[in-house]
Image 1 (tube, rainbow, N blue to C red):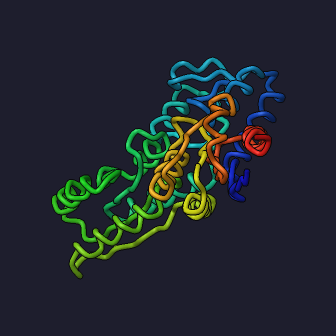
Image 2 (cartoon, helix red, strand yellow):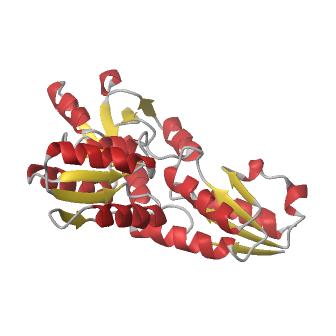
Length: 285
């Protein structure tokens, strides 16, 4: 059996940073730390950190210790409330996400209307939109574009910023941007900020390439991971057989034996050891 593993599999720089800093802070605070939401979208990593003392909370109001801001970031209201309640924050937001927060806040202050491409219920998008001000709209799919235009026209604003969640689909970013720029006449000033991180871009490109030449594609990652879902969506367009799993325990060995060429790709929050276990299982058949 031939097994192709993506070179861009697993932890991105932002995830590595968040995990290493969380472990460092747990040691400093004798394991007494709260985290606002899951640090990253990976059950195994979160469980490991919780075993070391990290307590996951749903609201800043539930804080009993110093509070870690997870890799996806938090809303402006969360920072304000923590300050009001004198809760100490350890901000482990991915640096690329923090940069987007600063960018949208700056453009908002300069009277731009902001089109934010992203998954509406994703924590990163929820955090980012809170820094955009009232003159903004989240675009998750093509059906949202007209509603975004309606709000733009009502605002009378003639300057537009297009920006996105760091793990948004590259192809959708390009598609939506084309629709918007072609629809707006020359009276509008449009600034396009390509904020999808390089790791996401490379991972999506490599997934498409591998899925095109294998009989089975295995996508590894958390079920609530936005960037991993994108890898699955890309794969099913190029390969007839695609599995979306979290660990090797999700695999059926007899099913795998049906294939001679398998591709493996993993999301940004997937630990290397999980990828290696799945690879070793496949080559052993």
